Image (tube, rainbow, N blue to C red; front, side):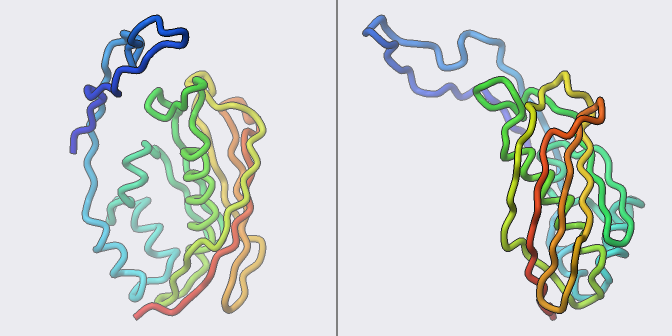
Length: 189
């Protein structure tokens, strides 16, 4: 799929009636292309493979990563039982209007790390879904932040729910965001 920013937003009147404002400020248009594999294959394996095996298969390149990881540009994945690390270099296409990485992108990394940490503890036939994600943003992340690293760990896992946390640090090792996540565990067929 090709994603292009060539479509411009509708012209808006400037404050004070000064006339139309160019939606992209006259900046050069950039584009990005990415590919992904059909996610149905991995989803079907949840019932047949333990979570740790499934995640290790992604690390080894035996299984494709989920499309969202390609979409946001996750570049690294480490997996141990109860612990998962995802890495990403902040890019312009992650930015919000304030000139920093959008909180939704950072929340996606935090949710991925926490949820996959829970997944790494599950046997074949058990799936999970995030019930809640409580995020605290502590510092802005920009293209100057370098490689951001998000480590998720399981704090507690029962029969029906699990609690995990995720810590996102910038290239200098400074904590940029923190999250806790509750996950619902369920049987899959």
